[in-house]
Structures are given as structure tokens and as C-alpha cells.
Length: 130
Ligand code: THU
Image 1 (cartoon, protein in one colour):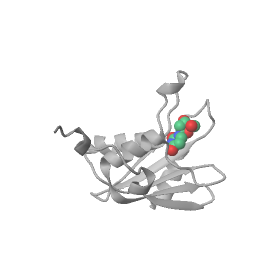
Image 2 (cartoon, rainbow, N blue to C red):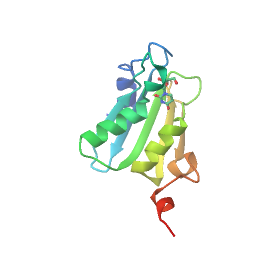
Image 3 (spheres, rainbow, N blue to C red):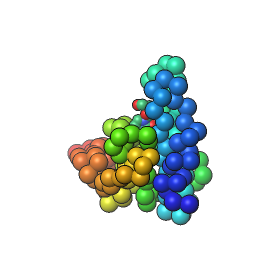
Image 4 (cartoon, rainbow, N blue to C red):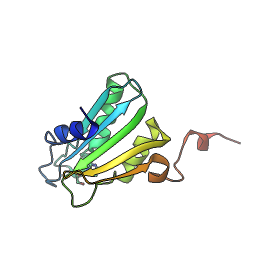
């Protein structure tokens, strides 16, 4: 199964009654395993979670810690980009050269490296004291 197929499949399980915007994310971990997630909204809107966050949680729960490739898909006129918060979450587990592919259901795609999605990312080195 491709990451696009996995992302499309999990997208159908999204819980998005408020935005009606279903998103699926599928990532490959360094182990080779695929982990997936969908957005899960909440009537208290800020409590909703993104598809990417779900895929990352599934990856950690399965014991993996390193993303080697990630695909995000939604029914969007153009490939759907991860939100700012998800860019930081992805950067926690993916190196700067890891490719994130944003896709629409028709298969149109745009691929960006993590370093280009989140230039100047806050990282552990910033917490080193003088
Ligand atoms: N959403 C995601 O799941 N991932 C993204 O990259 C963009 C936005 C979700 C959050 C919310 O449930 C819905 O899309 C509309 O913002």
C-alpha cells in the first residue's frame, strides 16, 4: 500500500462534523511501518486534533520515533499543507531533508522538505544556556 492510499483510507474515518473537512495523514517510520491518522474535531473547537497529530501519536504508540516520509491528503482544490502547529510536531520526529507531500484527492501533489516547511524551527539547541 502506498502512503497516498493509506492517507485516503484513514481520511474516510475522520470525525469532522464542524468543518466538514476530512483530512488523512500517513507516514512511514524508519522501521518501514506505516502509521496513519485523521482529524478528530470537538464541539469545543480548539480541542480538535489534526490528522498529522493523529499519525504521529499512532507512530509513538507503536514504538517508532523517526519519520522518513509523510503524506497529507484532503478534498481540497489544491494540495493541503500542514498547519503551523503540525509543522512543529513533524519537525520533532523528522529530519530537515524528510519530504512531506501535500495532496488532493485527485492525486495532485506538492512536495516540500521539512526544513522548507518550517524554516528557523525552534529546536532543542535553543534551550542550551550560556
Ligand atoms: N486539518 C488537519 O487535520 N490537518 C491539516 O494539515 C490542516 C487542517 C484539520 C483540522 C480541522 O479539523 C479541519 O482540518 C479544518 O481546519
